[in-house]
Length: 405
Image (cartoon, rainbow, N blue to C red; front, side, top):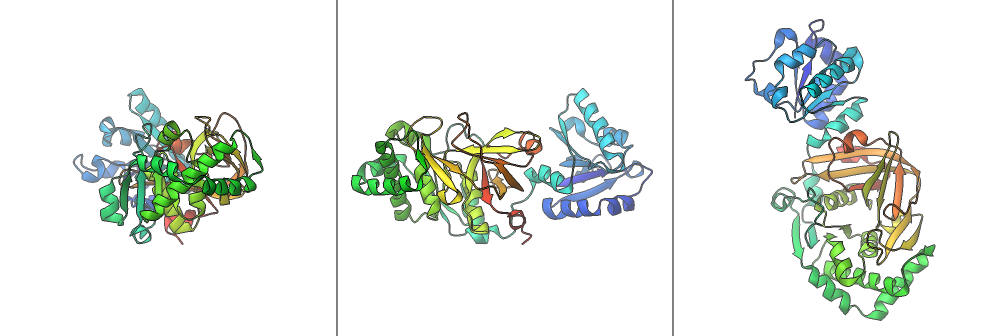
């Protein structure tokens, strides 16, 4: 990552290095940033490769607006990212620059706030989390039960990269094998599983006894394939199972996660890798969820499956979108969680933050399990998101993900 730092002629490079020492150090360590400080008297040559395509421009002081216009290649930049923490009239200058860019039809944004908030805004181009992540994943076998759902147009992973760089093997499994497996599960065995789950639930709202048994058959069929293929993790194009078998995989995935097989839905391989790393790195199962409501203070997540061991209580519901099968309405404890996403086709993007749960709401307008965290994710999600699904990990694990502990 290349970052140009602009300063006025009233200051010098040493002032910038001293004033922003902590932020510059974090940019170098966490974003692998190459920093170039520029003032009026030290404008780089236009052919300078360090200046040709900066990933961000940090405004260190006021009075650099003309310096930005005259020296940056803003006309050719798809989107200009400005960094301004507010000191030394930096935000005022950044606002002037952003207004100028908008007047010229150029998209831009300002990363403002604490060092952590600025770093988070840049993490879309940061390197893979945890320097020795390959050592944690090498030898892992992942089953892909069908391709990603049609609406997941940005959630695939380069499987050659997984194999060659991380030592992760992926195996394609035809969904017909799951369909045949569901039909082959003995009724009595499925009844025992469904009864065991029913005992753990505080209520059963929509599902019938038949729905519970079919959901249990799906779990048993998937578990047997995972055992046969020696899978450590799996993700399934679950809506096809709904259409063909009129049941859901929500309960199956919840139980598989409880038993140590990392299981995700919708064929989302990026989110499955996030869940897998959470398990290997933090020793925790993770809740795969959709960001659903964003405010300036909170972010609400929701989905129809969650590891049961993450819940203080649960109700058995129908699947939100299809109104079929069995889904989990889990009640998650109010505690600290880590929000994490590892994405990009070559897993070169990531986001991580810690936040406290402030509410476990329920609304019929969202997927069944819902959790509200005290964090403003608007700057990240509305400007530079890493797909839709994110994972929620119990506890504070930001330091582990960043490789700090």
